Length: 194
Image (tube, rainbow, N blue to C red; front, side, top):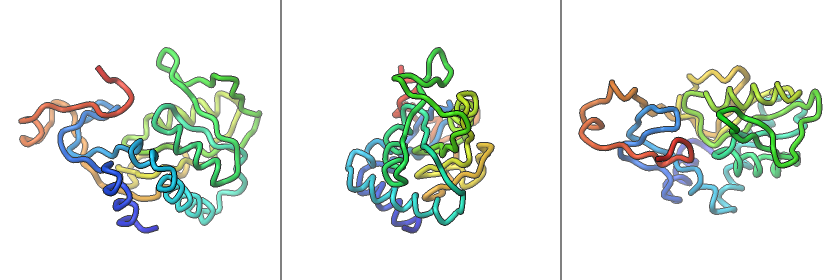
């Protein structure tokens, strides 16, 4: 699946949005990728994650014991990646601002983990999830995502395999271009909603 086919899936799902958005990182952007809309169609989610699983296999990462994701955005992608790779999938939740395993999830010591995300922008959530994997006794061998909106610039500390890369601008609140400054931003994500 090439980049345009991936973006066509997002467009067909009404998940490639234009406007003024405040991302979970606090940055502002004229483009938002609503992966929840893409993944709500199980067949579409399976197509995208099957293509991502193929990219992972081609990357030659070696064996992966399990998939771990940050909640909230990575949960469905992580589950589907676990299904595609025939590995268990767990997720970390924020408790008082830090990722923790809950719901009886455990990380076997030394487990080779794939961190799975929906979208990577700055890589902050990915790095936090990878740190939580390591703190729980696992080893993060790589990260994956449907869309890397940093176009390969985000450093998550391990190799990042993205189904598609986009170079989408993001701006600090005090550095908005005039077209964004003229409109009020909305927070469509799952974090920091007011």
